[in-house]
Length: 636
Image 1: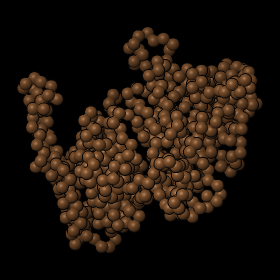
Image 2: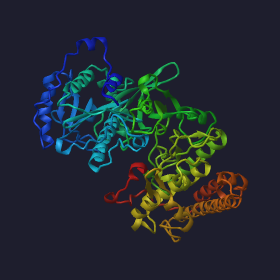
Image 3: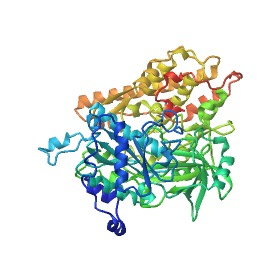
Image 4: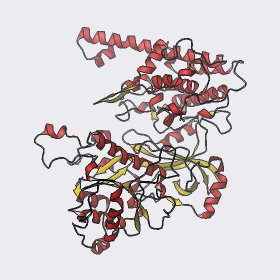
């Protein structure tokens, strides 16, 4: 983005600040020494910025050597320079992500590693423009880009942010970066040694922005000491393991705004800046003096995309069993509560993201009556299967009573009740009304959680998501948690088995990740676990897994033969396969996975057995922490 446009769009000046802005020197940084060692840059650079008097009530702190002690495990980021309000105490903890106003990444001239590549003023041809790579592919430059994304991810997870600003400085160049939940906008670079006034003007403008313009959410307020004490008392059961601030959060309601106290999230987006960025909090409602669960996310907005709050209200109105009851909440109003990145995707200067890959996201927040437990906290295998069966009943009710398909059945979305007596199917943000899916997939990407997606969805991201994809996902939830948390005949190789079945994928240059082969060979040939697999001392669960795998195998073979007939017909008649598909009958009524019924009976038969284990049947982690995998991010 052109530098002037960046500042005018995102750091606007009022008449008052424009009149008060002093003239800045282009050569303010010209005489700063050139350093070979990155850490030697920080002090002299900070001193020069301070001398310019452009920070207002902010301060710059060298935070390169002090990871934030309050960060989550694996999140020990150390930004080179952090910008705080002058009142923030940094004497003990230099890095305080929860207080940061802006973050800086600095590089010396010998290790510039510019994460981006500015285009020429004019391309020689359209082909040259189309093939231009704005995201520089070199290893060091890609790594720097990842570092910036990492800082943004951790920062936005720790704060209630609408967007954030970062500055990349690779001597002698500087770029301004704005990040939100749909991506980032990057300015053209400039030479801060010869155009120092540009950097100083940016900092001056930033110092005069309102908190909301800086990216702070105006609907979230720091709790008073009295409110903090109340939250710590009422939410003690979910006390965070790391120190977290207590906030008073506004939730929209009919004719009134509800305020709740939130201490620390029990779910948060620790591994990705973009997307739904869901945060979940047990909260204390100040108006009803009751516990509730707050869900805060950035939902995709588009034709036929339904709000989760509306979906839940529909489920509740139709008495769908084993789903949360929505109490209040909806989209947050205001122009600051939507992403802006997608608005600039069609600009001529954009040579990064494809406009078709971006969408508008709106900030949504609502409260529910249900605070659940993660599935891996089960105390018996029968309790575990009962919880999944309850979630399955919720899925069946939603489909048959409301015509709604969940589309994200996963280990995170099947929860135990707090007392452990049942289960709930949660997180309906990807759900769709079946009748509205006739136009194909809801977005040009998969719906669901990779480890639990069906083979068809993993192989073709644009496949229409149907009932059987969700039924298949339920089987993977049972299998995954059985393999990981119960003793079975393949425990010694559990790491390799989980990786082969649930993580298998190939990265293609133009089509992204494609997977499903691990699950396909599991279902069709008993690969990875083999046909002698059993859960030790647990015949009901072993038989249940065998039954479901046979049902999936029949479904797979049916569609394999169907596809063969379609290809043969298309070849013999010399017609398009899509036309041939209309001429080949596809009757699935005799198949076990035609609807929910067979799996309901399988759950009921298993749970009615009298031979379930009665001792030492609780969850045990068999996946060594030393050999952990990306699945930990999703399944725990």
